[in-house]
Image (cartoon, rainbow, N blue to C red; front, side):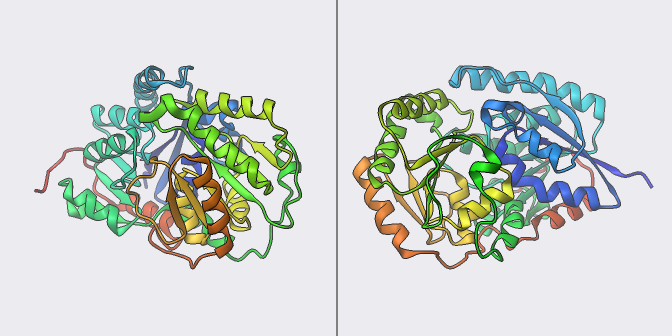
Length: 385
């Protein structure tokens, strides 16, 4: 029996965690063959080299696509997308997949969707239908219109994809694959690894046994000129609180240079004896770190998605996650030092919240693999209005 060839494209470090359980399920499925393509910032050391964790987990990589243009500005993002179209088209031509799978809303995923669509390859989109506060929303909904199959993460997202006119027979609420990784974390009683020893990083090494914060704050692409000012507000708040803090480096979005420069400059001016900085971490370890923390601060979607399932308190800053469906573990504030500090002090005192299943219950990977094996292969669109 000929197996269906499923090309999954991973373009950034968050995308791997978002789709890892899908890769595992495809590998185990007797009727599917995984063609894993790693591209863009997932290959770059300065953004955490997600490819190292992919290889460590034993996934064979069919192709690597180096397409990131340096600059971390709007022009670089547009050109990176264009280079991605050129390179991925060649990869798809060589691999001849039956279905291409793309994940979420990052600008690099647009290249995957365009290449597959123009080459008449059926396109499956994971995490369509959600809303956010920057260019990601345009990208996500544009990919929805290019995609043939939709594996959404929530009822809210499913309803939105249907409103966009997609075929109801091809829109599936599978839940988010990242919840598959979060499910076993809820069984752990304490942090079982030393993050300093295992992942290195830079900065102070405050003790973590009395509790700690996790910070992950990315630039907002339509506010990229303000990225340094925005990160400085968070830095001042964290510096004032003196709570042990594990801080993760930003994504390769427009404005990331301002965010990174703001962090480096602040570290030169202030001792930050309670803050340690990391580039990246294995997905499961990162979720364990979050689960046993006092809470997450910043604007990462992990606060909206995985932390809802884990019940971790989240102080969400700014507009990056604007209108995205939330559980009651999240409070939203603006970019003001006093607001951030007060929100952290008040919110983390509440402790862990009740788990929420709005983004799934931990079975998404198997569901998606089963659908990939059985759906009719098609690349034409019928719009249902």
